[in-house]
Length: 148
Image (cartoon, rainbow, N blue to C red; front, side):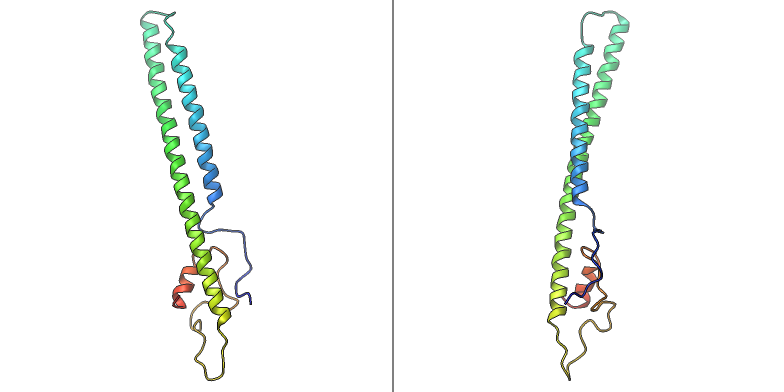
């Protein structure tokens, strides 16, 4: 017996794959910026140009390299945060999937007989044909309502 609403592909808790892709993009861009900064530093430290303007230019380029290195480091930090969030999303999705399976198994195993108390979902907003979709955080409320 399938007691849930029509399944959807939406995952209200997040998209771990998209977060992994965002992390990969951040890392790639950070690496490109770091390479650009290193190349900039190598090209601008040439001793062939001398004088106050050359010194000022080299100082400006050194400051730019520092800024670019900082941006690259921030992108690496952001990538790490995206990856950590992706693992959290996966964990939450696994938990919601387990709760969903437990509730469905519980509901499927309930066979009302004469002289039995009403089903445990009576008086709750949940019941056969009225359950959350896959990975919906509302599964936690369903499990709590059923005492699971």
